[in-house]
Every structure is written in C-alpha cells, then in structure tokens.
Image 1 (cartoon, rainbow, N blue to C red):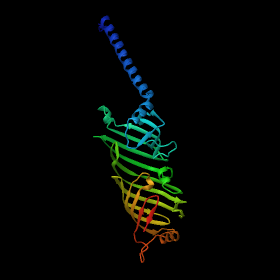
Image 2: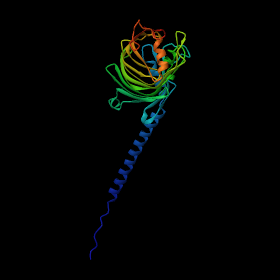
Image 3: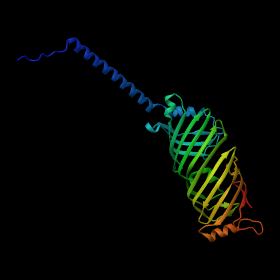
Image 4: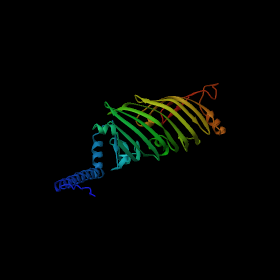
Amino acid sequence: MRLPSLSLPSPRLAIDWFADLGARRVILYGLWTVALFVLFLFVNFPYQDLVQQTLRGLDLGGVELQVAGTRFAWWKGWEIGNLKVLPIGAPEGTPPLLEGSSLFVRPSLAGLIRGQLKGLHLEGAMYGGGVDADVVLADGVTRATVDLNGVNLGRIQPLVDALEEGQLTGRLSGTMTFEVKPPNLAAGQAAGEIEIKGGSVAGVKVREMQMPDLHFPQLASKFSVKGGRLDIQELHADGDEVKLNGNGQVVLRDPFTDSVLNLKATFQPGSESDVGKTLIALLPRPPGGRPDAPVSITGTIAQPRIR
C-alpha cells in the first residue's frame, strides 16, 4: 500500500508569505494610526477659536452672536453653549433678543462630500423648550425651516419688556420658515403657524390702568413677515374670560414697543362670562354698535388705541 505524497511549500514561498503578512500589518497599523490621529484632531480641535473667528466675520445687519463655549459632540455635530443674539454695541446687561442654553449644529453631509457648506441642521434647548431647524445655503440666500416645541413665553425678554408691568406665561409651539439674504436681514421674509397653550397675562397695566388677569388655554395664529411688516392673517384665542378673533398688520419698529398697529378684532365673553362681559363693555364703540361688532386697534404696542 502506497501512502499519499505530501508536498511542502518551498522555503522561498514561506518567506514571501510571512513578508506579505508583515507588510499587511504595517499598512493596517498605519491606517489605524491615521484614523486615531484624525479622531483626536476632531475631538481636541480648538472649535471655540474657530467659532469666534467665524462670528467676527459675519455681517448680520445690526445684531451680533455671542457664544460661551463650543465642543465636538460626535454624531450630533458641535455643541454651542449659551448662544445669545444682541444688538451691536449693546451696553453690558442688555437683555438678548434671542438666546439658547445649548444648541447642536450638524453640517449637511451632502455638502461636505463636495467640500462645501450647503446646509446645517440645528437642534437644542431654548427658553425651557426645544428648537429643531434645517438651514439651506444657496446662491447667497439663507432659507430655514424652524420647529418650536414648548417654548416658555415668560422667558423671552423682549416679549416681557413689551408689557408695562405684569407677568406673561404660556408654551409656544409651531413651524416657521425664513428666507434672508445677508447682510440685509430686514429685507427677508418669513411665514408660520403657531399655537400657545396655557397662556395668561396677569398684573398688566394699560395706560396706568390695572387690567384683570386673562387666561387663554388655547391660542393659534397664522402670519407672515415681509418688508418690515407683520401680516396677521388669522388669530384665534379661546380664553376663559374673552374669546378673540382678529387679523391685520403690525409695522415693525425698533424698539419693538414702538411698532405701529393696524388690527381688527372681535370679542365675545368666554366661560367666565361675568369678567368677559365687563371687559367687553369697556371697549369704546359708536352709538348703537353691537357688542360683537369688530373694533379697530391702532397706535403702538406701548400705547394701543381701541375704537
């Protein structure tokens, strides 16, 4: 009986195989080292300096951005801490026009593949609620869609400052779209639909006259902004004391309290009809005018006139 013959690899083939294995290891270790270097570069890159330099180069038409810190946040992109929007040259202690405690910014992957910044996705916390936005940059025009969820109105300082005194509460949600062409932000346009739940105003004075507290469990509005004018297409407020339906325009001014009003509204008593009837009876009307007839609201936000 003959045993099968075994063919052993030649010493030369064995040497070549081990040489190839060593080369593979060198290549793999090299790639691993490069990957780790890139990773640590991303994590430890001085983003704060880069963001500050970028902000200094932006022309936002009368306002500036301030941030407290920036860090790499992995799949969320970069986290910007304590973002504030302030008028340029505002004195120390001036309340910001807009602020967010934490905002994550992630560039568009499609743009980065082409080596260009074509868009951004933003999400984070703002005024005790959440904000989610998609920004597209094309042909010198910035377009954005912003979703708000549960923003606390009582923490938005420009709104609070619009009251002579008193307290504002409520949670704002909705969707808004913007289109601007920097640096002329005033020539931009916006549109949106919002709703406010659990809204109320308490301790408010109008022309030194104390007003009763008002509660609006549900308020909804549809609006647009263009050419420095706010066009309120629909406004419905289902209040405990008063039910309101209105529309009209507001010509925006700086400061905001000087904005000019041109509104039409109808008022009806709510479930707390006694308070509502008393308030509606105080509205000036022409002789013989119906209680549910529309009234005009003119003047400014700081000094409205009702007739």
